[in-house]
Length: 370
Image 1 (tube, rainbow, N blue to C red):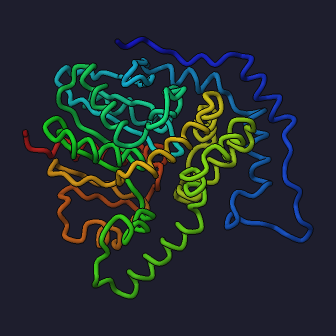
Image 2 (cartoon, helix red, strand yellow; image 1 turned 90 degrees about the vertical axis):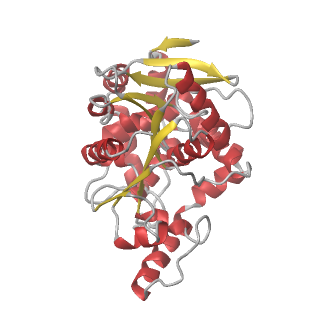
Image 3 (spheres, rainbow, N blue to C red; image 1 turned 180 degrees about the vertical axis):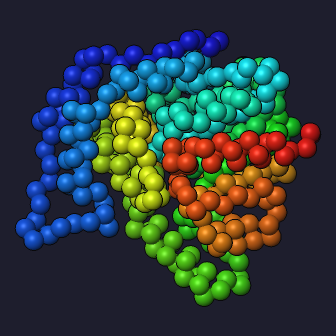
């Protein structure tokens, strides 16, 4: 059974956030030292964002924007699953499941849902342990169990066959849906960015004939990933330690997420500050910094990989791309729909919504009936 849902954060929670931001403590600078982003988010940036979150950010306006889309909850496998469900005016539109990643939320898709409903019935769930798919009902929520839950969600909504799209964790769910439920999935579309090549050699075989320039680009991506993956190592092995900080300190939660948005977005564009803080606020109000960390822990110990090959038609949209990405990720060019964009980055739906929407439409429009 599904139940209508509206986001209604109590005023007491907003007042508590304002108090905590007012009383926040910040790290003292070291005389003569001007740290840059290579060490993480600088204190001056955290302070500026926190002050805007306290004095300039309008949560109620963002809450209203989210509530502009029909939302529901349902219980699947004992877990509350929150989702947006926006039907197209075309009754024959293709059902499309959009799955967010980390450190994202359904707020990632605010600018793409409306345009997509021209062609799709759009379903946007919150991953278990993220946003309003909380609290967690128990341990064991990871990629495979989430995939099964989302397949059941589409069944409950009356969609026997559907398309799937996502990035980051959402790409993992999307690919696994096709691998486990190939008879139900019309096609899969994933968005990524050039940083994904850092996984080559770990989760993907590495081409043996890379040129020196291609190898240099791969080495740079691996170096950047090693420098920035501390968040994943900590949450994959010691989630309860960081959970304490993320649940008690809004500035800690802000810094934890904002650093990734800086690192993974395209410097030429980036993400609107209000959109960033909407995402951070969802983590703060739902205390899902902790449960999102537990999801990553469960995923790391599940024995399931993030990649699941299938014969279902697949499309890729790579943002902030370069030619080396396909050389490494699809060296035999088996993926028929492969799009590359100089713009955007990891958070494509927030950075370049028009490009992403156009590519999703083109991919599904090009599919032959199955």
